[in-house]
Length: 286
Length: 298
Image (cartoon, rainbow over all chains, first blue to last red; front, side, top):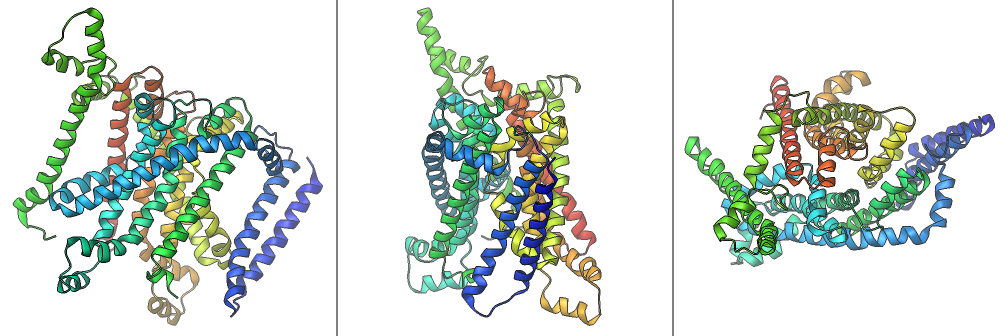
């Protein structure tokens, strides 16, 4: 056990905590300064977490099999960029993207049809709501059996997982425009498609983006879990399950880092897109 | 959409549409079962050098040992067989496996809910935590935790923690998030007027919490708990995959896929679906009772 490391980590923690407390109490008039502080606080918190992790792993000499230090993980990431890229390409760029686009697209199209036919709405929506709460990852072994070991089976799991959140949210969103607004469209003599494109779809956008956000994490989970049931010898899920078996925990953490990065980036991208599309929504107006 | 009243309204708006949709799904299922399974039967017939009549073909596709897609009645028979006809303690009983999954789901759900509430209370009362913790709670969910599940299980096994707890911890990680986010919203939902009123009463922070913030957060709590319990189940099932398929619904899925036992996979899936529906429904019932006793019934 190395006491000097542990003590310096504890010191760093206290200093960082003190700075954060002070920062949180500031409320500058300047807009840019306020935004900078709002970014700085979580950043400092994150850095503190990593320093504590590193310090504990080094200070208590925790074996790398249990919890490798961040520096070890980083070294592993930089050393095996090519493997990580190949896995990322197989899992994310092939399976996740294809499945995500198809699942969200089908969900959206079905929602438009369901919305047009009241009978379907009454019948399909309760069923859809039920299915949305079910553990759909469970179909992974079946899809692997049907579509083989390569990426189409993973994409199929992603399609099914993303379909229902999209369906339920879009149908709810299409009802978001109120009666006054619809009456206004009527006085303009707008037909069904005009009302849909110019009023109801824009009004449904916050709901649709909500589904897109939920689906972005679901898609990654679905593809990775589906790889546990059989893959060609490449892919993030494959790498995680085999490297766990070989007790190469630092490689697993490297894959997790890639997955988290991909998840956060796609979430951020969708959030940016949402800001651009639904700029009129109250939550984005000051 | 106008709602019709009374028994006929219930029938026309609920039973009829849902029934028709379920019926259509069942018919499609049968159709696909015949379609997907017929290739195997046609191959068999061709190999034996015999012609097979369409009627025989259809009958045979629905009674295969290891079909590509089992017909609904095969799954139903297997379900009946493994729940009612087996002893509960038997390793082949779905009730036994369901119970294993259910216990880790409930433990994880409980821990997740408590953690979520704790975090929300801390966040609402501390500006530093609000600013530093909240972004990381959201980031934490972009990590596909289910992907790390095998590692967590193996690592915890290595330091001697095994059985229920590792699986429950995955459920906890998944379920704390909706509760934390919902409760932060809920604890902040009392409006300024009410808060000001508490101020004029000279109420302490604890009093404000228990008499105003907590009661107004209860509806939010139950809404998030419904989501949390459903994903706890998913977490428990995935958590069972890497443990070498010992017991639980996830283990049934894995062994089924290893040995090509499609009927077993589908039965486990239906079992999981029923379990999920029951759990969500139970939370809903509790929420209705609590809301009525609090005078917030709709």
